[in-house]
Image (cartoon, rainbow, N blue to C red):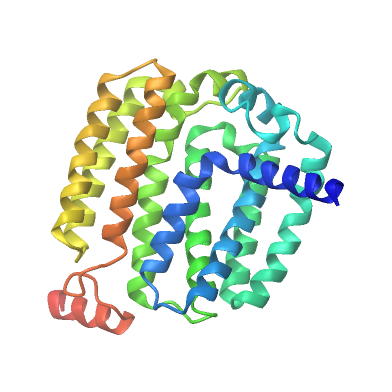
Amino acid sequence: MSTILTSLWHGAKVLYYLSYSDIKTVTLPVLAFSLSIVPWSGFIRTLLTAFWLQSLIAEWCFSNQSSANALAEDINNKPYRPIPSGMMTLKTARRIRWFMPFFNIIQSAILGSRTTVYATISLSIILWIHNDLEVSRKFYAKNFLAGACFPALEIGCMTVATAGQALNFHQIVSVVFSTLVNMLTMHAQDFPDVVGDAAAGRKTFPLVSPWGARVFLVTVLCLSTVGSIFISAVHPTLIWLQIAFLIVTCGRYLLIRNQPKREMISYWIYDFWLAFCHACLSKLNPAVVPITTQGFVQAVQAQWI
């Protein structure tokens, strides 16, 4: 019995540290965003959605952390992860990495719909291109591919949460805006990791253009804030909180440079800004963004035809 409990405890630790850095940046934002724009389907469906999401994030993490040059990066940036810490061998991680896509496709077919399966397959293909083909070594490809993972996760979560219901136009627009924000601000996480990225041979945006990456990030943060406020119908409190975190985030990214520990704090503050931005995007104003495709066509016709 003690051996079984020890093995279970070890497995739990591996899974926790495997995705520890993704809890606040991927798991919670995607889950909160997805559940907030679909009808409530009960506590059990919410648990199933969380399980489905965490399974796909595990596939993401095993793929990323067992890829070529990942160990050199993690030794510098995230030594607590299972492979650099010695909790798991690279060979075991690679085996699990190729098992997870099949497991996730099967559970997607059971828990969701055909759309869920397509979202899962899309994520697996993106991860294969990103990690196994090493396309992510170029910063623009890295940001695009990593950002493309989010709509797959969000659409999958929404279809699992609603037991396979089709998405309406309003929800699709929310996902599109969310994807654009994630893609264009993805490099916010790269500033604290420049040492490890350089050791791994990656050419991230902050390494290619340190000042340009900061200016671009701040510009996109400001435009995204204005855009999300314009199309949303949330309580003013959320809007003011988003603006407050915008000011702090932009100030820190412009003023604090070449200080990895302090820049990690900047990234955490950015995560709060991202959460409030997604909160705005989860509830769109029907007067600005019609709920149905037909309503959108009618609005365009009324405005331009």
